Every structure is written in structure tokens, then in C-alpha cells.
Amino acid sequence: MDLRDKVTAIIAEQAMLEPGEVKPEHSPADLGIDSLGLVESIFAIEEAFDISVPFNANAPEESDFDISSVAAITDAVERLVQEQHASA
Figure 1 (cartoon, rainbow, N blue to C red):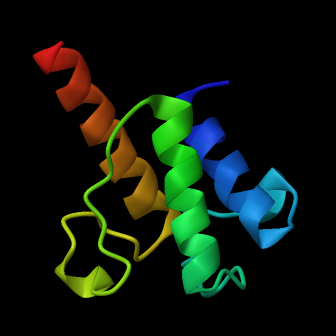
Figure 2 (cartoon, one colour):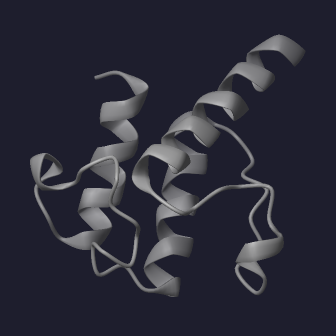
């Protein structure tokens, strides 16, 4: 399972959907994920990829982590994973 599939699976699980139902252009809200579900998704992503996500649930618009769509979340995770490997 590649990174994109893994992120999609985590988001799908929070949305109680099958991964095939989650499209890159979907926002968390489109998938019925509320703020608590989003935080749980981010915790699951951090654990799955052993990264620290710069996300403030109290001020998501001020975070350096784009949550506007599944594609944006995946791209942000990809960058964080690359940064982690570069600094390791």
C-alpha cells in the first residue's frame, strides 16, 4: 500500500466509507468528517507515518497543514514524510 492509499484508507475509516468512495477532490466535510473526526484522522496519520503534523484543531486555518481536500492532505503528508527522511 503506497502513501496515497494509506492516507485515503485512514480518511475513509473516519468517514465510515470504503476507500474507493473517497476521491482526491473531496474535502473532509464532503465525507461527513467533523472536527473531532479530523483530529482523529490526523492522529492516525501521525502514527501510521511516524510524523508530527503541524495542525492546530482550534485554528485550522492558521495551520501549516492543508486540510482542504484529500489530495491536499496527502500532499502535505508526503512533504512531511520526505522532510523527516531528509533530517534523519
